[in-house]
Image 1: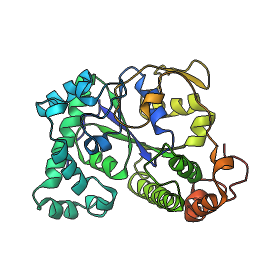
Image 2: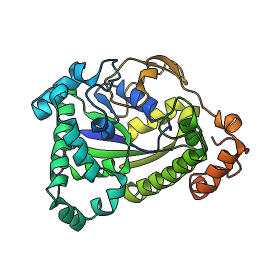
Image 3: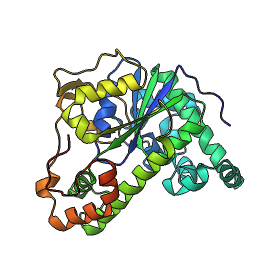
Length: 317
């Protein structure tokens, strides 16, 4: 059993699926006094110290990340063992490991194979403790979206864990993945199928793991956020126990964002004055076979979260 978390510190974890607006929500929260936008920490070891921080510098040259690594591991990012950390992450912090991660006996049995889980938990705990210390934050925002990583954070004694479950119409997420500049999934039917199945599984597992956590789970939709960003951000801030924090809104739809130090995501786009508006290009630009395929594969989830099966129906608000 992990020790009792320090309830003066909080991790606000955004869970769900990609292309759902998590990065801009992360960046808005990161503007608040006492909040630190860490970005997508789950993906940290996949890349390298050359990966960009949202301040515009590579991680190895960012003074914040240099300080975090020095305090956590006694070395700069440029000297850190990213490959070794990635091997630990791949054996523990992936969604296909959730079947044993969620079981105490399973964790014990799995950890006998070289102690990989203990090593990864220690590495993760040191990283987050250092991020709290260096940033001086009360709340760290992690927009990794991975249910497995969120569950691992719940095993640690770093901070109280608050989960924001962010849902978007899967046809919008799948269309965003299919654009030529988005190379993570092929712009073809195979890519649409993969995006649909991942959307299903991520949201199913997210609810299974966290929805019963009283006062520590909040579900919102991308569509709600895009239509009423100031109100939804106020709801999130109140949820995490920071009501009264001054949000950086110039108007109901426009925010003023300064550069932060988050890792990963589409962070570079979000600085200066940003108008929050709903992206519904998929309705007209997504070809019919892809639209029908995604609808069929995610039908139960669409009904679960209140989206119309008819892709041509009125927009959800």
